[in-house]
Image (cartoon, rainbow, N blue to C red):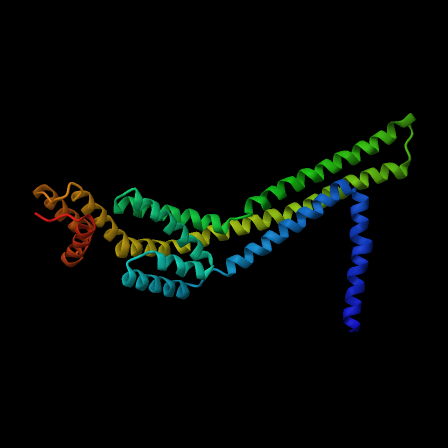
Length: 287
């Protein structure tokens, strides 16, 4: 209890005397924004560090990918995978959900497997960077603005000092000293905010780049699993539908399907199942 009272009185003294005194001396129009900037900057840095620490470990990521592969192999649909990642709520789930969203658009465009693979990998890398570097530009902006704001306070303080000296050739030394004090105080306050912000931004940016590179193999594995267990099937389904669009299968169309089966690594069993499903849905016949 005594320790808590002492701690409370210490922070009370710090707030009532030291912090408020500095804000008043430096000028509220400069010091209050700098104080707000410092709180925002440190809050973002702490939040980013916490988020980076919450990145799943390699073993956990591998387990997630195994579960996703099993879901795709069993259901042959992406809706269960979307629900799976929505329940995880971590960095990888954010990235993979972005990949799945982009994947749905690519399926509608009937893109080739190679095109989809490249675009989905780009989406994964971009999403990882967006997730890890969120709010970091604010820290960089605060570092720059805090320095300029401290410089602005310096200029104001010097103007006050020289203006006092210019009055009738005489100046009150106390007023002149106060002006110089304000100039130095705002500069020091601006640098106090800017230096940790620059260091924090640099550290977090390097850490984000390192994590992004580390996660690339897992993202590549997920994209390949998605395309192998679902993408190639859906691509072949779209090809079959286009071949049968006129209501029957021509000799040229049959040869085209055989080439696509080899290209997409579609087994004969998978091909028959897909073709029968498409034929049934389109109500056409084979020739």
